[in-house]
Amino acid sequence: MATNAPKGVGIELFIRNQITPAIHKVTNNDVKLDWYHGGIMGDNRDWLGKMKIDQLQGAMIDGSGVHLACPAVYTNAATFYV
Image (cartoon, rainbow, N blue to C red; front, side, top):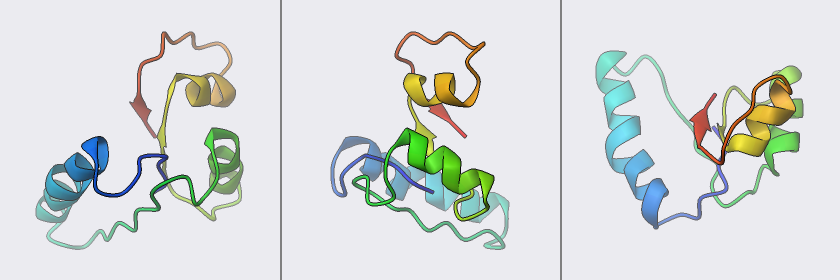
């Protein structure tokens, strides 16, 4: 999972303290998430390309990323999870 969120602030703390443990709980630890923070995997365009070739299974994309993935979708700066 890729995100532009830097480690140790805001949404990253939510990911680490809420999202990841919840996923582990509901999957009985069968699903392991590796988070790539701070844009080290690139940006929305890079993430979508890596998902197409199965190098990345998900990302926290913003409205512009949703528009890149599906131009028919209009978003107003909302954050979506893929």
